[in-house]
Length: 195
Ligand SMILES: CC(C)(COP(=O)(O)OP(=O)(O)OC[C@H]1O[C@@H](n2cnc3c(N)ncnc32)[C@H](O)[C@@H]1OP(=O)(O)O)[C@@H](O)C(=O)NCCC(=O)NCCS
Image (cartoon, rainbow, N blue to C red; front, side):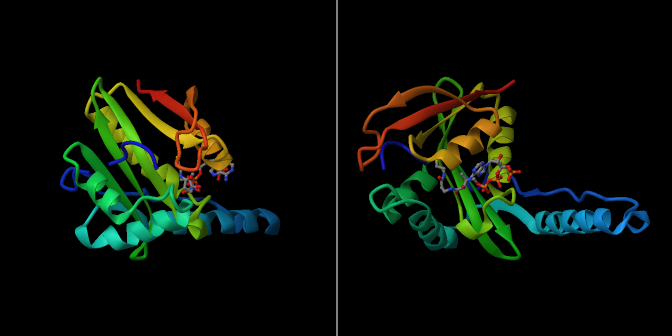
């Protein structure tokens, strides 16, 4: 795919999702208890979810995830991924659940205090469980901690899921770039100003 996408594995923070407690389940009617039970199951799944820095032996798995997430020609080659991840201004977070990689995010620090999201990839089976949000939170926190003023990204005009995902996190469309992707699809440029 187009342009620059790209880690400094030594700087990537390790983030654990905090445990959250639910009170009073035993005292509730059956339907409430069932809702509470499913909440607990969701939380249990989140409790095991963690982020960690990239390790060189992750490369093949990240490559396979990227191939699964994007169409041929838009997904990255191994060489491109290696270059993005290894760039000295890049940062990569890897999401794991029970030792299995479920997604990753590569971001590149640009001039003018901007963090550019190179790619965010979550395996299909793990979507809508908060993995993408966890990865974006890590990138946003990193950007805030480094006094950056904005996060920017491109997403395909027809990638409605990604557009909704970013919009739900406060990103807004500021531009459109025709023929951005190798298959001719236009890109939306979306940004979020950091407080
Ligand atoms: C976009 C992507 C990273 C989202 O990851 P995710 O782990 O599913 O996201 P989350 O579970 O954290 O979703 C957070 C919120 O975003 C919104 N959202 C995410 N996916 C959505 C979808 N398919 N449709 C509508 N809203 C969606 C929802 O508001 C969701 O909250 P909810 O599940 O409580 O309703 C994931 O779909 C993905 O990897 N897609 C393929 C690769 C890709 O397109 N990457 C972006 C390229 S720019």
